[in-house]
Length: 117
Picture 1 (cartoon, one colour):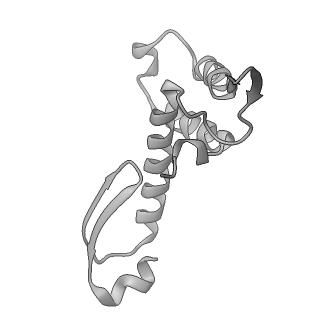
Picture 2: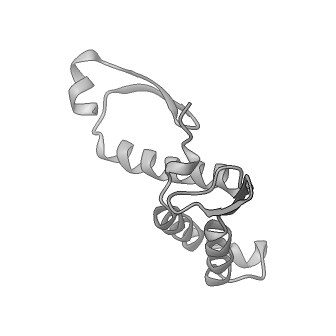
């Protein structure tokens, strides 16, 4: 089993979330925190990757931390961002696209397969 959560670079995750927050025009009606304030909190959460195992202390140094409640949300946002950018560069031909976490089901004409990849 491969964990998507631990493969998401923290800086990429941070950039994706910051961009998403900056697009919200009604953020002030949702929270009293500014985009910068939310991002500061997010950086703390994404970098709080210390763990204790068999008497030793470790720090997870790449990707979002496995077991962190925010990791699944962040991984989904990053996948959504990558998916949107990728699909916007593909001219046409997709009959169906569905994603669940990091798995996709796609229907397209066979002669478009190379262009799609």
